[in-house]
Length: 112
Image (cartoon, rainbow, N blue to C red; front, side, top):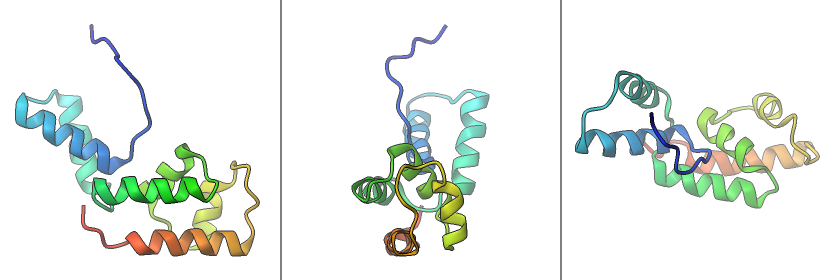
């Protein structure tokens, strides 16, 4: 049985980094290998850029959990962003959504 030492939310880019590092030390389990393949396919930016983007989004008043989802999805429209943030306790004004998309756009293209 595996003992959980700590639990935290991470982006797909961070999952990719963690599993790649683990794979260098030991053989990955089937579930870990499948998860790594998924992360390779869907992580849109590298783990350093993802961490910076999460921090910037949290500074805007978005929860860490929602910020991680924004990073994983990298929405391109206010409609997509509104869907991700609809449960947040911030007012989703057009100005706020535009500001968040502007921040996301700064990181678009940071190769995974």
